[in-house]
Image (cartoon, rainbow, N blue to C red; front, side, top):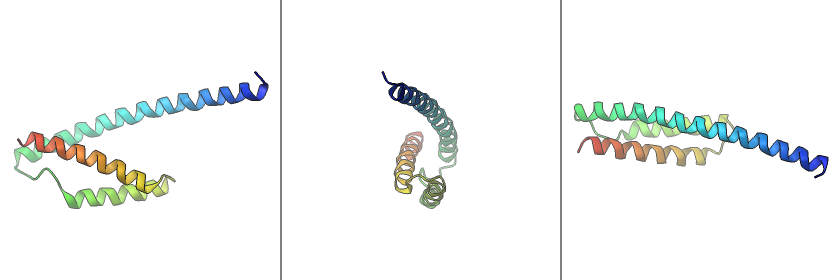
Length: 98
């Protein structure tokens, strides 16, 4: 293997290690977020509040799109991601109210 190819392989290995660490951070961060949303869902169920809060959700999407632009991340991707997370949270809240 040439010096260039060896260096490229080392860089690839370093990038992949960083990606693996970031994936772990994402998973643990999502788990922590869902612990809080489960608490919110239980609180809503106890007090007969609706499982969905469209105003809050719209504000969160707007906020996340702004953060994405600041972070140089595609805001459309950020919006799709948050919509997916919100849908899962609402599903959990509806289950708690059953």
